[in-house]
Length: 511
Image (cartoon, rainbow, N blue to C red; front, side, top):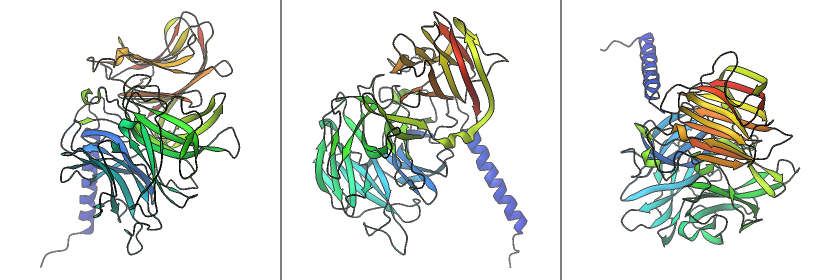
């Protein structure tokens, strides 16, 4: 007869295992350039975020993933969950490549009414709708998988594919429940046609073609990863508009891949843009692509939240990172704001990120002399920080912040008075000429408000995200400084400027 294991011993064993895992994670996330508060896989390649859905207290993040290496290939859906959009737990690969069919991008929904019939014993199904890419034929079709255990185990539907038009460029379904029409709606990309096609279904299995939108806006690159959602207009009470977001493979303002959006109306059958000829860019940096929003965020929360792949197809496979390659942007809340030229998309970092704030310093009413200027009361290390700064131009032609400054290494985040542009200059943050055009200056139009310009920055080990004004202009850029240390400085060009106020917080690692 075996002796029973003492409860205290079991507790100590569990605690030791937990500490061992924590130590392993801490070690894993200390490689050069590893983001400390942006999501990255433990290892290997990642690109588009997929299947964003909220269910029973968890935000699910699926993402394009190569289980076998750090270059694109063998596309599968990897998986992570978070209670707060900030701290993530890695889970096993959810939907793997199989039988010569890669699992391309798509979405996930909570089928609360069990329209699919996948639910059983009172368990609500999570349903993933994804593109299957057939390697031999090149055909792309739409498929289903479902989970009855809060997204931990997934079963591919035996009746796949549920939608097949025998096309080689038919991908990235973003499905949502439309209350007004009482059915599921699927925007999906006809990529080479520069069109978004809309389908409807009562059960996610049988789909009816409704209408097409496009070509419109920017048509230089192929269209991918659409999203359609309704947003309130901030400064117009009880008003809302629909936003159709479309990612383009090339032709974005900073070069390479990026995203554009259209504002208009959706009547359950078709989308009509107010200004279909206009190009509205989502982000003016080089590294924000394939952004999609979370499904089923509770009504009491009320937010539309999205996240993007922080990378660019022009150099995605050349980044100097290991053992992982690819990261996600910060999650952002979305709204619309009425402006003179229509409605503008507003993006703001999710409020949950304030939980990472640590040591704080504040500065007020500092005159910035021409050239570079060190902050009073000693330097601030600028490796993982959040900064909210407000400037007045004075006589300067350009002014702003030098971040991650160490000798010849730095990144500029500034404002050009003559062109009225917010900009990020990363020429000095390109260690080994990663790719042609990587080292450059990326600018977004931004007008002064009451004579001032506001910048809200998040600086991580290999990225900077800048929210200009009230979030109406965003620049997202990867940076790879030669030095792992670096301070925060001010700069002014051809005159003096004033730093009205600046708050700086050190940010904790999520790992």
